Image 1 (cartoon, rainbow, N blue to C red):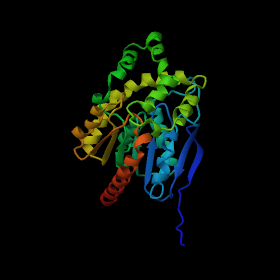
Image 2 (spheres, helix red, strand yellow):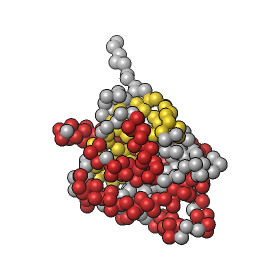
Image 3 (cartoon, one colour):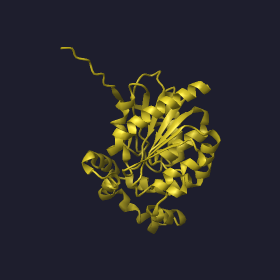
Image 4 (spheres, rainbow, N blue to C red):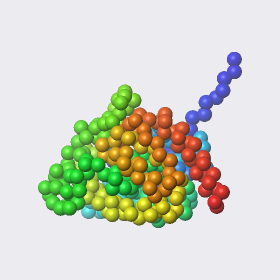
Length: 300
């Protein structure tokens, strides 16, 4: 009886120094393979990609960092570091430079979107493709969930800031994983336990409230993100949890306005669609990445 060896990609858990900060990242795949960068959302970290990384690493060099204040990266004080999406984009950019990534595809989700789209504005020639999973770039995709946050943007007061503190509670963290999901048995409860442990660190809630306020600068950049989609027309795969309360399906459909070549897939899931729809997203992504990198190679 013959048996065939099963090759399971090894995922390395690494820490490096970027701009004086310890940055944790997960890495897998051959160093000379096409690069895929996975950018996480709130309130999670590269932990959200723990299953996706080995599913891609047989063919791609996969890099998934934690931003400062998230996961296993450093959490400097607010006095020592300005928590902003612009700073996150600069750190990811410096990490990719350090790792020698000159061209890459992005997977962006939630906070990963304004981080990744900033990279695209800085280096449009480096973007081989974008997979956006509930990674918004349109006001169409801002649901009524954002009304309280918009009030905070309009009046940065102790009252409007305090009104958002509940968003870092365990109930809300759990809600983000389960809302819109038809079969909750597909969701690993370790997700919200892991994420909440980091949110509950002393000082972390204040960091998150700073980021909620900074998010207004992402919305201000939406026209520039959209111009990038129009002008460069990068390959875009929109794989979106259609039942998302935070970034609804209107935000997914909006990508087609500026890039008619974008591929839209609305999934019967919620905010963290990768958690229960990996069996649909991974095949879509592998097919998309193969075509996107072939197109990038032909254009080089």
